[in-house]
Length: 346
Image 1 (tube, rainbow, N blue to C red):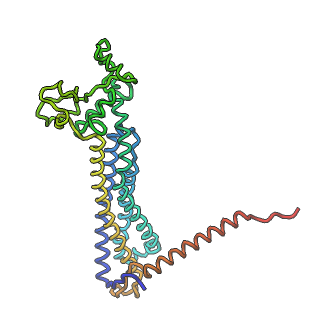
Image 2: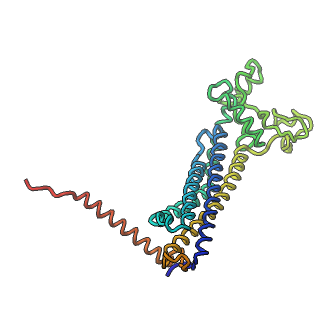
């Protein structure tokens, strides 16, 4: 017994074809939007690839770009099919291909749903990439004279200013690295010598941060150096002066930015997916309604359209049987190829 059977007269078939034609062209616009979202995400990842060690994954933006292109192609073709469905002579050329086309549409919808899920799952890979990339970027902050790294200071400073963050996990990350180049250190100074000798790596470490960590909302001038020394500043307590510096780390700030971006994109793709599923169902009804016309010479006659020719369990059983037959056929062919022709007696 057919699943979700509906009766269509000529007027309903025409309205269905016209409605699907309009929906398909709206889906072409949706495909362009998905394509644009993929490009935007790719650009955003590229902009900050320096703080991701150039190892960021472009699978999601590339998938969005690909699905956007496929959406435009498939829906343009479906729009043409729906337009030709109103003319029996034009529709006849599409008849042999419709079942295969609907199967491709189902696969496309599955792929689109998986891409939407990937949008929500990108956070995990980004978190580790950002942690490693920011850590290395901060190490190279002082290398303003090193070819290939001279831009890193500006990159980190602009990042901290734009995202209102400081360090990888927080401002204390700067205490653990030498972020001032040796070029700007006076090694004849006793203070510099003492600081360099105070650690086994021979680095100039201090409880200070770059200027880009300063919070302009602070009511007092920014304190960048001797942050943990209360006696070095008047009326200062480093435990409470949170407004003086950005407290949030840049990894959390970037992760929040990209997560919000990906969640929004995932929601858009899910809406487009629902729209595409509706179109596929409509195409299936149009296909079966036109196939079921009892008298092609009488366009006014009533026909039946359905979603599945049999019930869901029967359809699934038939699908599994066809897969088994296909598997057995391939196995027989493989055995025949291995056996080969029998050798002739000499």
